[in-house]
Amino acid sequence: MAYSEKTRDVFTGEIVAIKDKGLFKEKRFICSPQDAEITVEYPEGSSLSKVLNFCANNYLGLSSHPDVVKAAHEGLDARGYGMSSVRFICGTQDIHRELQDKVSKFLGMEDTLLFPSCMDANSGVFEAVLGQDDVIIADRLIHASLVDGIRLCSAEYDTFKHMNMKHLRKKLELHQDKRTRMVVTDGVFSMDGDLAPLDEMVALCNEYDAMLLVDESHASGFIGKTGRGTHEHFGVIDGVDIITTTFGKGLGGASGGCVSGRKEIVELCRQKARPYLFSNSLAPPIVNASIKVIDLISGSTERRDKLEWNTEYFRKGMEEAGLNIRPGETPIVPVMLYNAKLANDMARDMYAEGIYVIGFFFPVVPAGAARIRVQLSAAHEKEHLDKCVEAFRKVGEKYGILGLGKSEIIEKYGN
Amino acid sequence: MDKMKEVVLEYVIDEYIDEDDDEEVGVDSPLISSGIVDSFSMVSLKRFLENKYKVRLSDEEATPEAFDTVTSICSLVQKHLG
Image 1 (cartoon, rainbow over the protein chains, first blue to last red):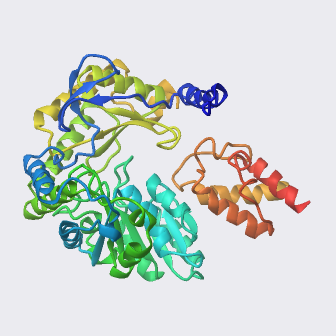
Image 2 (tube, chains in turn brown, blue):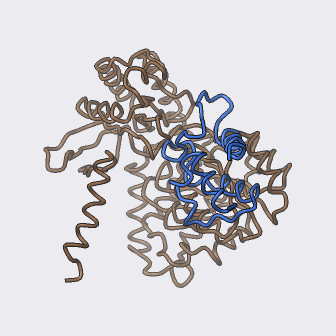
Image 3 (cartoon, one colour):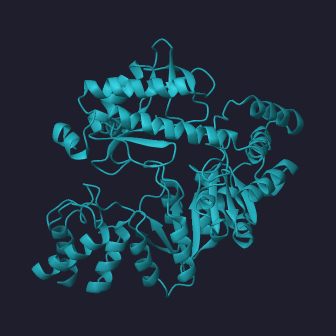
């Protein structure tokens, strides 16, 4: 037998080690469409519970929107289920081109290329564009998919302290001898919900002749007055050279991603990016539904406006209830607890109160920075937000953390 | 060795600690296992050591364990200097 007991023991030991470190991810099954209110089987095998979902990336509430679902059905009927091909052989339909054109227009970019996911876009873009004479200078807290993509590329790389422009300047000065420089950041950082200061970054990139790549996965569709993203928020739409983003979060929630930007860079991705060349084309129902999403949010800011209102209302409610939330203006609201066990225990108690949230701790976030990350949606109604704040108040009171700051919570629970 | 520790510690503080951070770092403070330096940002520390001390640290040597404290980093560099 090729899979011997000895081999099995190797992997079992690794799984046990993950459990011992408290890092084991449990199975949770959603038995309903994705929405503000969902039906969940958790723990596995237990009876179903109706809970309010505060941990989805469903920022615009479009995952189960009737117009989006209808467009997916129409795409299925008109263009079929799948392409059975990568894009460049026989996997590109007219609707792939239409979606790319609409995304370019929406983001204010010259050209766009679809990838199976934003993880794939981030994995492929660096290697396709840069070589050993170039340098990538990245914020230290960029998404793991960007880190993986950078590591796959032969360019030298360096990092700067999170959103520290003085440090970025120092690194840009250090690497003036390279052929090209590419600065890399998230637009909105997924764990803290903070916005990269793109106005300052564009100015620095101009001063030191560097390109700027921004991952807008947690921004596209709702950051900025018309939801174009972080570059719109900071008034530097023309200053960003490359955007990578996803159709798996605000822009519909299914899957797919893209590289959008300067036409030569997009062309190089079309010619050389390995996840584009060696992975299947985005399925027609998803492409058609994504076109509908872009049409919906291009025609009205109603959903991002509602999300903005929800964000302000929820953040104010949480502060008044005495929770220690990280200040900000995005729908990612970290409830800071600093202690991993406390974050896990509180998330479990929140679930018992009918609120689905998750605790995050090292290595997903820096050591000593454990938190529950709340994610708001345009699908949430005011009563959902009230119920969530009330549950946090009740659970927070149980653990005696209401009104406490960082040092007081650490003093009480350690970190 | 003490001079090297001083130089490396100064670089670590300047490169990895934010100006407004009250974190105190000494030569035996854990860097990687505490999350101050992660495997992604470790590259600048490795480059600094190679340029400053004119040594070549292979990926096999530059492990998270070897880079976990200023003292262990200096031991590794010292080994190359002979």
